[in-house]
Image (cartoon, rainbow, N blue to C red; front, side, top):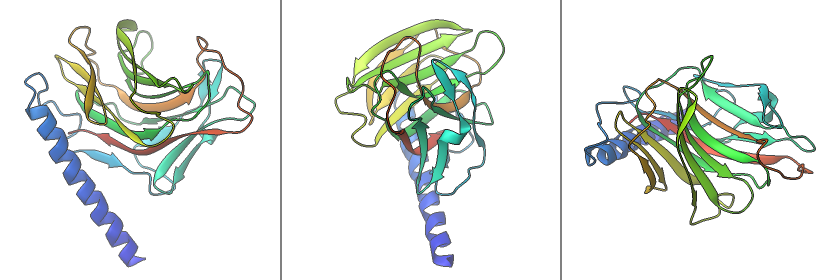
Length: 237
C-alpha cells in the first residue's frame, strides 16, 4: 500500500509539473494570452483515481429532453464515467464547487455513441439571469462535429461548428480552452481549431462537463447505458 501511495504521489507531482510547464510555454509565446492571468495559482489536476474527489460535485436537475442525474456519475479506475441512461433521456453532469477566472482549462475525454445527445466540457457562470459561458460541445452521432461557443450575460456572442479529424468516441483526446481578457482560444490535441477576439466573457465561472439530450436534436433512446469517459481535467496554467 505504501509503495502504491508513493507511486501515486510521484505521478501526481510529475503531472502537475508537466502541465504547468506546457501551459506556461503555450501562453508565453502568444502575446494575446497573458500568463499572469491564471485560473489558479498552480495547476489543479484531477485524475479520478479515487471513489470521491475534492472540489467537485455531481449535479441533478432537469436539462433538455430529460435530466442530468448525480447517480449517473461514477469515479475510480483513473477516470470519471458520466452515463446516458438506458431507455431514458437522462444524462450526467459534474462541476467544480469554486468559480475560476481567466486561464487555461483542459480535459482528456472519450465521447459516447448516442445520436441526439452531446458531450460537453465548458465554463459556466451559474447565476440567476443571463450567464457568461464558454463551451466545447461534441455531437455524439458519429459525424465528428464539434461546436465552440461563447456567451456573455446570457447572449450568444460567438458560435462555430468544425469537424474533428478523428472519431471522438474511438479514443481519448485533449480538449482545451484558453481564456484571457482579449481572446478565447480552443485547441484539440494541441492544435488550434478556433479563436474569438470579440464577445469575450468576463465573469468567473464553474468548470463543468456533462452529457445530455438537447431539445434541438433528435435521436433514439439508447437500449443500454452509454458512457462519457473523462480521464483527466486540468485547471490553471
